[in-house]
Image 1: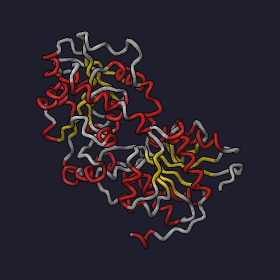
Image 2: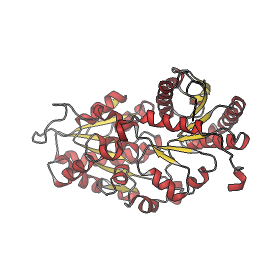
Image 3: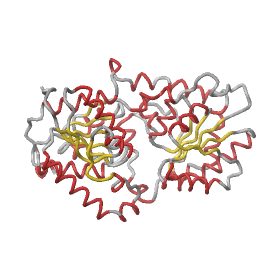
Image 4: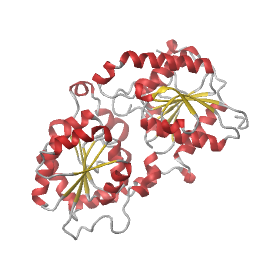
Amino acid sequence: MIDKTRKLTVAIVAGEESGDALGAELISALNSQLSQTPDYIGTGGERMAALGHKSLFPISDVAVMGLTAVLARLPLIIKRVHQTVDAIVQAQPDVLVIIDSPDFTHNIAKRVRKKAPNIPIVGYVSPSVWAWRSGRAKRMSVYVDDLLALLPFEPDVHKRLGGPPTHYVGHPLSENVTKLRPSEGERTPLEEDKRVLLVLPGSRSSEVGRLLETFGQTVEKIAAEYPDLEILLPAVSHLESRIRSEVAVWPVQPTIVVGQEAKQGAFRRAHAALAASGTVSLEVALSGVPMVVAYKLDWFYRRVKELNNLLKFSGVNSMVLPNIILEENIIPEFLDDNANPDALCQKVLPLLADSPDRDRQTRAFEKLDDIMRLPDGASQSGAAAEVVLRRIGSSKIVHMDPAENS
């Protein structure tokens, strides 16, 4: 067992803002469970820094998305990977926690395991091995001692794939559902004529580029049936100007909202949603808003996609997280060429009315709380901290050379 009175050194490596948020919550939870505040090193952002984490460099150096952006900054990213590995090996922390951003964090973990196999490694957020490149699960077992999963089906997936020991620690969204659900009067009754449609084209430039025009054409068709339709379009700040420019030609102008609070307010008002596939679909489902999901893959992922894995691991052939969690194809989804305005409009329209389609989704979403809730009312960050501390306490293990398991 770990001596909770001993001062620890904890290395946490995050590569983008979402990882910084999870890292900050983890630091707070660790601090609350230990007598002495650990020394925190590694890479992170402002929220982790505010709690005493010392980042080796600004995470903006490595927080890039898209093939072109990554290639443009590749020399710097490689430099930062080696810099981080050297610092961690030299510091000899009691544990290394890598958070999401697998292209960055897992490269660090592999090198640390090879150079300092005595350092226990905990992965926080599972790569989507259930969707594609399932072989990553087994490869991870060589350099990850424990994996903290945000989705309830992931421990079973990793067990079947030969991945590392995986622990469901809950999803941050589950702890903030009250901010997504309407208070009295926020969402107008269906008996009134006013309808509010949430349009969510994605948080990445590539997603917006592939979906925004199609969503605009879909909105035009829906508005022909609901002339008073109000469109709310939450946008991430770095894409706001692009989105404003591109929606300027829409016949029905959306109200663009920016920022987390404004986004949550839009969720509380919406009657239905048209969304890109991704975590946002779970956010919409937890808010109780019925939706239609669309996704268009770029040329590369069209060649390597393994969406058939979803049927094998979850019991449903779906790319939509709520469907996978519920093990039922509740939410209509359209992929690539099937995601066209006519098909999307046909499925969205019933969701704006008191219809069996709408009722089926909202009833199913009520099950999510029970499925995703942790036992005994545990918090997500608290459950994650417990696994990290257990791993520190059992860290006297002998790791095989990665080459022996390659």
